[in-house]
Amino acid sequence: MPDAALDAPFDSASEALIDLIASRQSTKAVDLAEPAPDDAELERLLAAAVSAPDHGALRPWRFLSIRGSARERLSDVFEAALRARDPMTCEEDVAALRGKPLRSPLILAVAAEITENHPKVPPEEQVIAAACATQNVLLAAHAAGWGAVLLTGWVAHDPTVRKALGFGEKDRLIGFLYMGTPPADRRVKKRPEPGKFLKSWTGPTD
Ligand SMILES: Cc1cc2nc3c(=O)[nH]c(=O)nc-3n(C[C@H](O)[C@H](O)[C@H](O)COP(=O)(O)O)c2cc1C
Image (cartoon, rainbow, N blue to C red; front, side):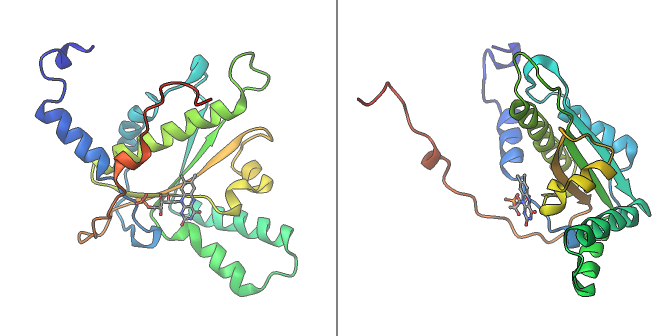
């Protein structure tokens, strides 16, 4: 048990932290305005990412910051992927897809770089570690007052998009974290009753 927890495991600072975590909510990508975290601020947020649970200490998480005109290069990549999978696609769909990376000032593309044939850590556990790191970034961003939302869509699973971002065939994109400044007047989301998701297991039923 950590020292600080010996006397008062749930002191007011811990309670405040749990409340802060519980109050995280996504912001629509179109509602994320300038400014977004700069690189130094991003590194600060990534300090939370690198404490994610990580079987085998493989550090599979990778983050690419995409901002400014690089977002238009991402639009180019999305467009090429769409035209490759559907050569008959209409120009409205192309324009809609091209607009996606331009919705927010910063996109963090998150991937799991997979160590293949690991004797103990299958690829899915590496994806889980990168997903935990992603959630830690979402929480740290929320704590720092930034808005964010994790989005995938087919582009996150498309091999040409993955390659254009510099990832290998076995690597997996966790998604695109759209980040920026949230609107001041956000509606607080109602969350489900946590007790509904907890059962006590005392042994096999048969
Ligand atoms: C791996 C992953 C991929 C997601 N992809 C999308 C997506 O493509 N489009 C979308 O509307 N929401 C997507 N979401 C859900 C949003 O990130 C968000 O959680 C959801 O809008 C609910 O908002 P909340 O986070 O405030 O509960 C995804 C969530 C996860 C975990």
